[in-house]
Image 1 (tube, helix red, strand yellow):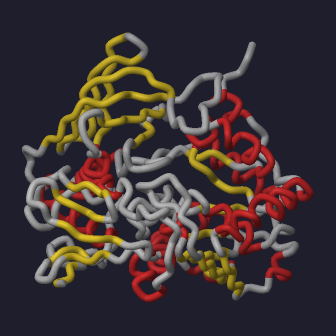
Image 2: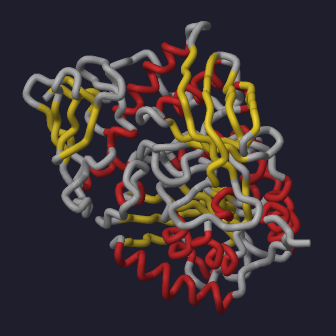
Image 3: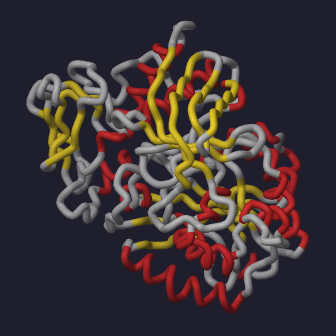
Length: 437
């Protein structure tokens, strides 16, 4: 009887990559992409020391291209087994690459024994693991706090920890535009923790260290670097997926990006954005200085909304699931399964509608919903239920996915969920990051 994709992933024996195939993949495919992105590598680590010594590599999760930066940082002769989002293994164009690299699947935001079994097997074989503790690539251009359990994971395996800091990766592959925007990427490799340091630190202290050392904001970096990225003359394309609220009139979902400008269709606010991602508004305007600061402002306002016990957001959505047997085409992230009403309130997330032609309902309590995943752009979002089932939601009426994500995160946090924001994040200063032009 033919096995489902899920069962193949669950029962697969994960091995270290074949050194010859891995080297070919890095030297032919990865290096050509790195040249396209004008990638520079700075190694503050003698990798000869790690030729026969195991380690875990961590990095800030800048974009979907981070495997390029990780493999080049340690070199093609030191294979890595990457831990990758479970749903990505269902996409046909990634199947061969994941097979050569022997990537290990991980379901976002829920415990996954397949991941532990796979990683443990690689460690026992003497291999090296690469994880991006944030758990998903950057949404705003700035790092989010590391996912629950990151410190516990690292402490359990007690291997030296190397770290890459990626600068420019997000601006090359933004979350609102799926077209590559080559400019410049800087990658720095350092040693983060040795075995003795690991023994002396608790899992919570390791989490705090990861948050501190991995934090990076690409827009802040480029305010100084002023690298020009090839946006094909459209740096504003689909930026309204992230910047959904007007900083002048406060209207939501009236912002559009077009003709090199960010414009509000309600109050006619207008700002330009160039290929260095500099935002310029007319004299006297008081708005967020960068897209990442704009999103932080939206987060602060969402926090105030969801503090209200009566808060509720509803919308009609399309429902997607992962296929059983046939891999998804390159542009697909799920298989259409139905539609219905999605609602989030202080209790959690609820869906009522149809799945494969039959009535279907789903509820995820807020404590079990720290965030949503976004595997391509910010037009849709997904989550794994506690039973491990994947559900993808696409809003049908307007570009609201980012507000859904912010609501889920802040409801989780105010309800005492374990995945909290950085201790230094100020929710009260509503003009933090604003600039007067």
